[in-house]
Amino acid sequence: MSRAVEQDAEETRRPRLWDLAGAWRGVGLAVGIFALTRIAQLVILGWLDAADDDPVGIRQRLLVWDAGWFLRVAVNGYPHGYTYEAGVLQGNELAFFPVYPMLIRLVAGLGIEAHTAALAVSWLASVGAAVAVHLLGASLHNKRTGWALVAICFSAPVSIVFSMAYSEGIFLALVAGMLVAAHRRVWWAAGLLGLLTALTRPTGAAAAVALAVAALMAVRESRAKAWQPITAAVVALAGVPLFLAWVGWRVGDPAAWFRIQAAGWGTAFDYGSSTVSFVASTLSTGDGWVPVSVALILLAALAAAGVALAQRPWLPLAVYGVIAMVLVYGQAGFYHSKPRLLVPVLLTLLPAAVAAARARPRVAVASITAWALFGLWYGAYLVTVWPYTL
Image (cartoon, rainbow, N blue to C red; front, side):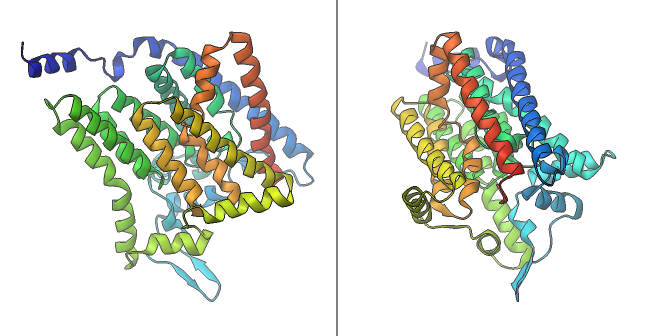
């Protein structure tokens, strides 16, 4: 039998996305772990809201800040221009990628009030994210790693965004699903999920590059059906440039998206100089425990990524994680938003998940519980007490 024929036979025998029998049997427990983190988070949020001098209710806490921008896009669509003259700021909606607000509009079209639709989409997407994260951990390692990865991810500091009208839930569901599909060589699914990931958040560009790496690996191993992985990669890579080009066309300014980001949020890529300055000044002055905690989270995430890379993870996951972290650390902007942007990276959480899977069950449960108690409280505190946007 020729090598080409052997490769074709191997492709035929290769388990597909829906053949993850062992991993799928663990999905119920993964969803249960996820549900436990969400219930605990909401209980803590309700407790802190009730203790606040101006309680507004759990629902309102979950609909603040960026949620308003997503809802404006969902209800009114994107504006045709932007203005930053004489103190007038209009058109910020164009900075937000379309998948999440379009899903809100779709659900609201069923007769559901827009704010409720936004939360429903976020919660359902987060359930999907828990399933996809478990499948990724189980596919790369084993079911215990998948369960631990779900527990660690959804109880991380600022994981409260998975309960808010934010796009992190849908983004994580898509990027983790894309990585699972690419690992299983289900290229049609990987390409579709990669495109949707790229149309959900700017860091979808990192996911698209990761898919391109997975495609090149597949082509190198077997040239029999090279067009499938290559097509999937090209489709995913087109996502972010297409949206940026559409924004430029809509307002008649090719650089409109970048101008809106800079004017509205002070966001610009400065190769990490502002991040380094923030961490150095915060840790040297100790000015405020929240800024100090954010600085420590940023340093801890870097250390965890270093440990993960030393363990030689699956290359596309490593590529996605590294590029996503470069985008987060390399841009100027609100420092207290960076931990939120790091939540879907996964690479930083992998060493802890692998260690928990190898540890004795009691040790793993105790360690993750301690992590969860801090992380769930921390996120609820930022939403109720901390006055600035996440």
